[in-house]
Image (cartoon, rainbow, N blue to C red; front, side, top):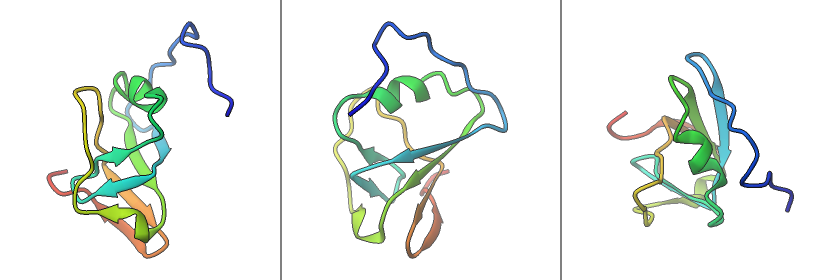
Length: 89
């Protein structure tokens, strides 16, 4: 898997930007379970007013995913069954 080195500069995001984020699983609050590298979470920590869209299959929706202090919830999730806004968003 190709990933940028930790020393790579962060690109700030702005209002109107859309960040499409894959995940292993998503819960109704829009929290995502990634692959454990933290690459998206580090980028999303400086997202400014950007909108986050998780993408996956409907079978990846679960009741709850484990989260840590650096995890960022998605504004909405798009699956093969449609688009749904995260609870509380």
